[in-house]
Length: 367
Image (cartoon, rainbow, N blue to C red; front, top):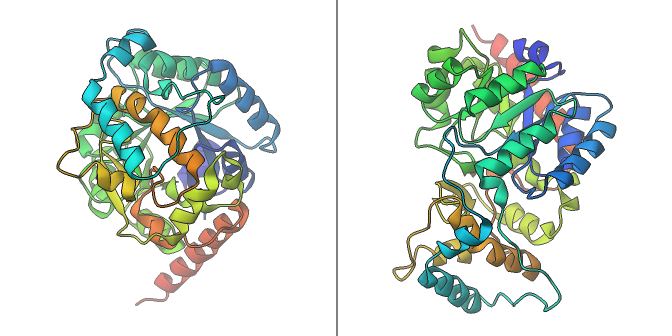
């Protein structure tokens, strides 16, 4: 199955896969899709540069992309010390009290505490763009809508396309007006940052709004060939999939992943919650005892981005190290109910395409 998106991106199949794992991203690209590496976990530009060097040598010369988290407006940013001072003591006390209640052990004395994911900061996201443009990336996607116009122009000067996520038709129009090349229509079912409108409703609204000016990718609740066929029927040029790659065998190379994968494999489609406790903006997460604790009456309101992530960064580090699937903190969409076995990326993608072909063939038999 080829669409205009395939020609635009130079890929074989209209499947774009977002992932924080370079091993997963490279495997998606090698299998004929477009692997998109999430950059937000990289606080140090040199670390990102090294990983993209690895991508350059492990994608069989197939195209790949990167995803940054960059607000369109530049926020006021202080040093990391300034940001730390903005976190209320009662929030820190709640986090420590909750970790104790959940039985999450302290970090070893010789292990450095996490500083927070500084990739949520505008300045760090700009450094990610600068690094990416030194590599043969085909696409830069922004998880928070349109990046600043000068960043879009900088990408276009390097012949790199820009994609932006949208949760409303009005967002999509604004993205395209700003120069964005591809719009990702991300529905309420998706993992991570999501809006209020479901994918089935959102995709045709955005296609009707901007589909004559830019390709539209459907995102949220996609984990089968039948769902890809549905997205194409709604007018999308392809799909953007994130959660579905979290139970691939390549993802097991991410540090501390074992407990997370066990939790995901056991979860059903109703085992997620949309909350601001992960980043400060509404994001869909796996529901665990950690997320339940933030819904209790004595829990404080989550802080705005990026303070919330800085607040919980050490907690996430401790939770990951504890190896307890009952408390993991993991963004994932409602498609988690279909993620019930560990398989290689190539097998996952091949099965998606086989079911897509079968679905289209069956539809063609209808009178």
